[in-house]
Amino acid sequence: MSLDALLPSPVRFLEGRLGALRNPEVLSRYEGWFEERGKGISEAVDRAGTPPLRMFDRFGHRIDEVVFPPEYRELVTKGYETGVVFKAVEEGDVAASYQVGYVTSFYDAGLYCPHTVSLSTAIPLAKYGSAALRATYLPKLLRRDASVWQGATWMTEAKGGSDLGSFVETVARPDGDRWLLTGEKYFTSNVGAELAIAAARPEGAPAGIRGLELFLVPRQRDDGALNFRVRRLKDKIGTRSVPTGEVELDGSVGFLLGERGQGTYLVLEALNVSRVCNSIGAVALTQRALHEAWSFAEGRVAFGKPVAEQPLFARQARERHETLLDAFALAWEAVTLLSEVWRETPRYSDRYHLFRLVAHLSKYWTAEVAVQSAKWAMEAHGGAGILADYPVERLLREAMILGIWEGTPHRQILDGMEVVEKKRVHVPLLDGIAARGGSAVALAMSRAEVDDWLALPAERKEAESERVFARLAGTVARELRRTTT
Ligand SMILES: Cc1cc2nc3c(=O)[nH]c(=O)nc-3n(C[C@H](O)[C@H](O)[C@H](O)COP(=O)(O)OP(=O)(O)OC[C@H]3O[C@@H](n4cnc5c(N)ncnc54)[C@H](O)[C@@H]3O)c2cc1C
Image (cartoon, rainbow, N blue to C red; front, side, top):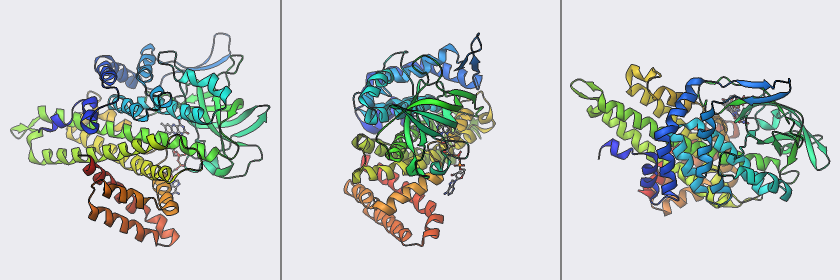
């Protein structure tokens, strides 16, 4: 079979990997809309660069609105209409939501960010919001038309995003049954959203990650006034389909999600949902990159025949295609586990801890595959790959962020290996894959490598964690794929 036949449209690719899809007609319509209209809007949004921020109305009142081209709203709304949030939160069909995300990311990986942060707002609200909060806000996030509200996730502050326990300096003060938040958030994607979840430290709470709580922060107060200010928009090399800003909270009204003392868990739960989105987005971008490379190589002739028929190129393309299938298997395992455990609250089951490890492995490994695939696709285009005339230069720009947001590779490695150390979840992970038909030899070797690593002294263990983590991710991805093909 030709590689082209192996790299069909995103919906056909999903069907090939998963068999029956949840909503094949709806997904096909979404894909068709992208081909006819969405692709063009997405390209125009990317070319236009950072949109302007309109800070004042004609009377000089702060309004802090992102001035999108009118078509942008249509672009971002289609995913909500197709079910990226309501399918998961209202219907409990997490897999269907991630299938929408796959199609979105094939066409525009940056566009999946607003959908991701909306999902990561809706889930904690649905799980941990009071009845009054849920009644007020949740239906708006679950709308199926252009009036849908969007969400945002605000954790990172100026001193750093990896060490939230040390560097979240936003303070929350009680004010009756609500809280007033003061501080600054340095990276706020989907900054035009109507609702955000924000990490903050209640006055007098202990230092470190355990002192953080998660708050729901609406864009407007009850009287219609702005609840926070957008200081500026970031000028980014990619992901221009999502505006990222800096936000100033100045006595901004917020509502506590969950019980006091649960904040760390809520922050990590939200990040884990986003990490699975990131994994699915990375795989879809990888598929798109290989698709573009192959299409170009079929038409480009060198040394008397199409580049696609040159043995070296064909071999590279086949190997990259194998890696794509491995990456999909790993990312989809994360989706499957999340579907099982997403309603859990602390104290979590062993299955939840297994999900955490798979989410870290998947976020780390698929992001790296996406960057390498986008780079190779650019090289496959020769000099044309650098030009804005071809889609691959954008794919590389979009891919570069996948490793960084939702936690850098360092964080995925260290947090993933922490779950291994504390919960020994590599054992059920590897045994489970063996029971499903993975190679007993490869999985046993992987387990031995992790066990040897666990026996190292603390500092060496941390220094050597990437080698073990990366190999574990590669083995798990490959063996999971063997069990599904
Ligand atoms: C376009 C964009 C959009 C974003 N949107 C959002 C958003 O909507 N909401 C939000 O909360 N955040 C957002 N972020 C922030 C993102 O999550 C952070 O950039 C990321 O978590 C890393 O934090 P940092 O940039 O502060 O790097 P730092 O935490 O300062 O880290 C710098 C470097 O040190 C490394 N490092 C840190 N600790 C260790 C260690 N123990 N061992 C080894 N290396 C280590 C890091 O891996 C990194 O390589 C966004 C970022 C970008 C670029």
